[in-house]
Image (cartoon, rainbow, N blue to C red; front, side):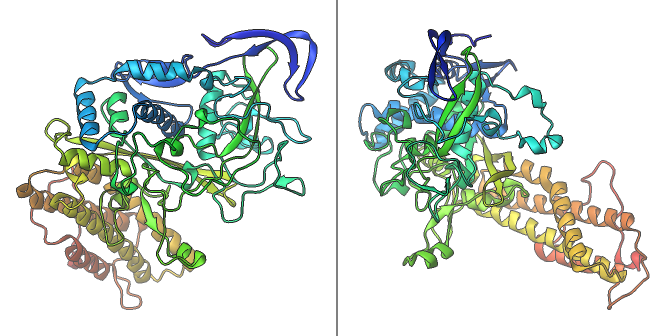
Length: 591
């Protein structure tokens, strides 16, 4: 059955694999992302629907959040919506910072978007949002064909579908991926342009970089999609309107005076003219701003519909615009950054260039809070969206009393084997008190210092485990011992996860309350760690009286207590943290 609002045109039957025309009649499809439903959303009342881009903006204050077939589809779709907002705002040219702040504040307080400008822009570019437009299909290249090969199946489009020879280990039904609805295909198309894997590609007709029948990315270049080289970060509010507004950065000091709103060179991919099938090395200066980053076309792609014109049954994909991420913190506003001394040496630069800081799938995002909210000796490496909220607070536009908490949401893909396959994914969110968005505030400094203390304290527990192994004469190989220490480290952080997330969400804004709050936080962590150490001893069944290499269980516990005192300070409050408190043994009792 055809999706609602999808237009159909009867023409001579087209063989979409070969591009030829056959005698019988078939349907040429149309599916317009601006007006046809394709974005999964969850409304405030819990209702789940697919909506069009137009409806997203119309209902933004009623929608809780954008969803997707995979969590990692959310950020690329949000960036698409932000690009539309940025482009619509840029239609009137450049504006002063005061005017932009006034517009932002008025819109925020109104609780909804002024739809006239948005709908007018969508109408002016409506044909460019059609997935099957004969001249400018959305995020694709018209008439794209492989050189001497039929299109790939849709399993190449869907990230969580393995190769056919590995289907035994997939939770998907093999019979369900012979085709995708137009809405599904649209979502995966946007995902692939953001996160596509690297590796060897099949050449398309018109590609001039073919070597032995294969296409490789340029040496030293980013081979994945733009977001694949970054650690995506966005801010979440109470509804979709708030989320979009919090991430709508209207100016940024990292751009060195260049405007965001009204930048003539910063245009979305759908406003470009005819695109070559060949891959393209960007010109110096690209990407020019957030619009170009958010709609970057890392692949030359074409969706292949079936003869009935109601499903997508194949895809053609090859390298497109090669992503440029080095020193682009003024254009890419949704990732943290890091200085790269290795790139400085290899490129012979007089400074350490900045590269996006990617996420570690094995670590909770709050553990790396410093890279998101602090400014260090290497300069301001925070995501632009975080700098923007700090500026809104400084200008008094975003009141901490009215909006005390903002959620930080991190999403990314992790790759394996030369970035040619998806290996893991990141989707992590935590609430953060807005007091911590001021990078030089006492609140921010004390919160980061406490997180650092927590990290060191976890290290003391890991050392405790090593001492327990030594005391028992454990002769396990170094590999096994390292694995056990890593397991313990992650297990301990899992114990502390809820504590630290809650503390970061409720961090006080008043300077007089900060020291007491941090002391209570450290005390809570200490008790939980001592409780963990006790359980570990009970579960590992070690003798309390054995001594090896000068180490006993009692001495290991004494060292742990001393280490926790060193990193977390003196225990100030009586123990009362758990509903079922466990007795923590003393050194004397254990010996």
